[in-house]
Length: 307
Ligand code: RUB
Image 1 (spheres, rainbow, N blue to C red):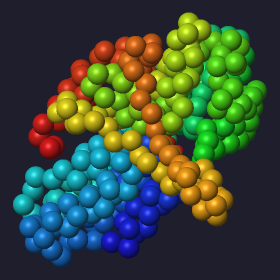
Image 2: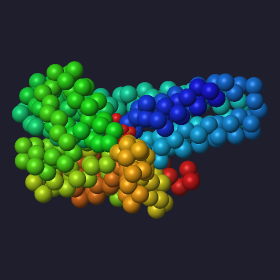
Image 3: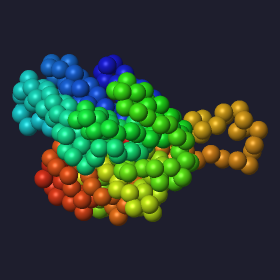
Image 4: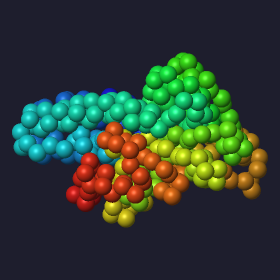
């Protein structure tokens, strides 16, 4: 349990962050925890697995990759504990292998949409979005990237380091420079924390303002999202919860104390309506957002049985 709690804490504190990495870490933690439960009977085993699953899922609320990864990993049907453990190990290994391969496939499919000379705007730090950008670059396309800082946690700094290490010419801007800069941009490429059944994208706060400015300037918005970033529960009417983060990320708490009439709001994510999205690149193809239901049905099960 200690290792699982350590992983949960790393996800909560954002030492492990980004929807894809969170999903893979949670799946591996649950698999390794299951391995330690061989001496239990099947009832005790299932209770422990459910508790551990809840501990992981409760760490961060917005990225659906986390409950999806946990749901796909914990499934077991055998009444024999040894076999149930093997099922969970198999589920996790399959999930992690598919997640890793998905990044390559998204890169190859998405790169088709990038032309020689394109200037690409990206936000936050998304491995799926960067896979598209790096693949296009590796194909010899002379592209450059504009990356937002992504306040307050500045994940844009991770992005610019990664792009620089890859040799890709990159410009850093502050978040509020997005609209002014849009005239230089050919294409917006962002990642996803969740995609709901109506094709809306939930991603790092500020994503919707990139999409709004892109719409106004008639620039395409492409979302890079593995199928496990789609949210089955939105089929049941459930809303994706937007994480409320600490004011301390935005302002020095001491300074805030001096201003009793001020409060700070720090939502971590926002919602981009489907109308602002041209294409969602998944590992099984490029789809318009209106196809979200089909992805949920075909790749995640329709969700009712997980409620
Ligand atoms: C990260 C974020 C990323 C998505 C997709 O938010 O919004 O765009 O998670 O990333 P945070 P990836 O830093 O708060 O976790 O494509 O790597 O899964």
